[in-house]
Image 1 (spheres, one colour):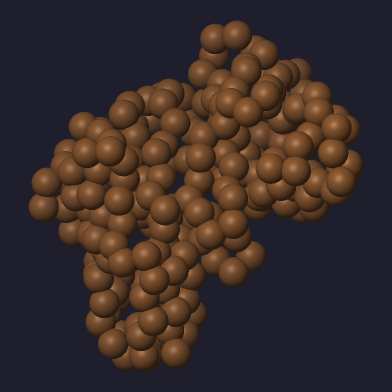
Image 2 (cartoon, chains in turn brown, purple):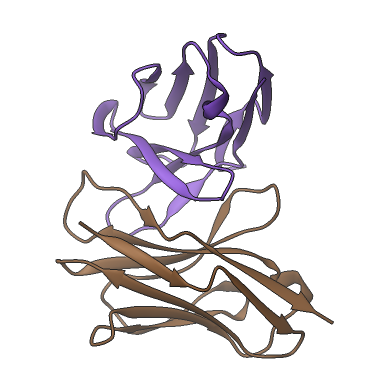
Length: 115
Length: 112
């Protein structure tokens, strides 16, 4: 069974500081990996995805993530945080080959940004 | 606009009632999903349909029944609502393997 673990349910940074949100996955087959963002009272928006192409993936809003198979990790980073980045972030994994599977989400990390 | 749209956005109802949530996508996607987000923001898959065929049916009370009249619509009917059904329900669709899901804006269900 696939799963993702997001380390740290809450991360606080200052505006302009580096953002690092951690995600480790467990999968017996090559995975697809995703990061989603959820702003208050809104749906989920796709930030970026890894689908076995380049291991460094660039997404929207200046975010990027690196797939490290040896560490089973897919951490999300942004060089300089903005106030508008404050939101809930979800890492998710999907089975590469199975059409009958769904995205499995981590428990989420709340990012707070202070001025 | 191309999107996944859910109605209603908010739903407040009494215990024991029956209610439905509707979802429509005009993206041409073949696969649609229902997810439940609980009060701790944990997202859990409930159902998935591919071209009107049920392909995922997680351990969900049988009071919950999805219906897909065509591949652009996936509705969720809930019978005999309970307090524990209070949550945000998200509909989503996907173009194919390796593509991200497009989510609706959610339906906040409150059972009183």
